[in-house]
Length: 190
Image 1: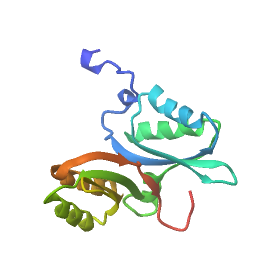
Image 2: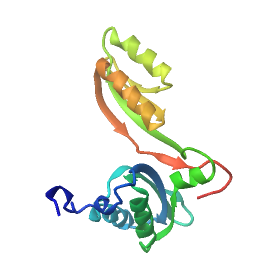
Image 3: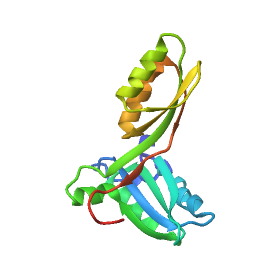
Image 4: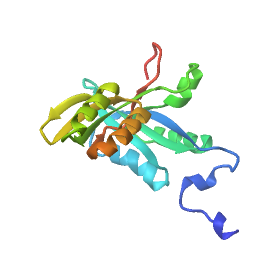
């Protein structure tokens, strides 16, 4: 075997060469108990899968269930493996590949949103430009001093990326992003 074809320790090595890697959004319903998130993340790291985005929160308080939303990248074969392995973890109740489900429903992607807090220097002439751009992107000013603004923006990840890039020349001091929250259109639940 050639040196450049040696296994890397990553599951991506076993993918068929003809398959193209793509981003998928997975929704995982789990018991809200200690160690569950660590087991889910351990599955990814132990097999060399990468997580692009991760959010988790208790969504069904009476049942003590949490929803984990994971954006990951892989070939269809690798994504099927990830889903099957997640389903075998004991406190996992359900795994839905929202990207596949959206396609089955006739949509390009599930509805995906992210929230970001962006702290921008706000002194002198740049103050008015910062506020003008924030308004254009429908970002809210949630804190302001004579030296800075903290702006809140909600939208697709691409919108947040664009907003941060436009704000950089004005003096981005700090960015905090939530990760993607997602669900599919239509009357059906997860």
